[in-house]
Length: 91
Image (cartoon, rainbow, N blue to C red; front, side, top):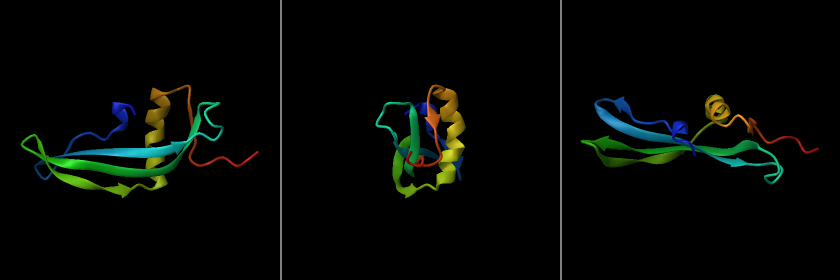
């Protein structure tokens, strides 16, 4: 996973929060091509205070719209891959 795919530290009421969006993906043709689609997504992270983690943020599921938000970044970083929004129809 590219460091750019992570949502890195941002300010929240004077405390720093490190959060990451992660996606489980599948390759429909068992890695014969560079095509993938999302199966599930989740967000996780922790709060920092004084530079140290003080609270773990529980994982939470992400809607498919979040995958779509990340697609442009993935397409820029990995131009030889195709990122689908959902599982393709069987042929």
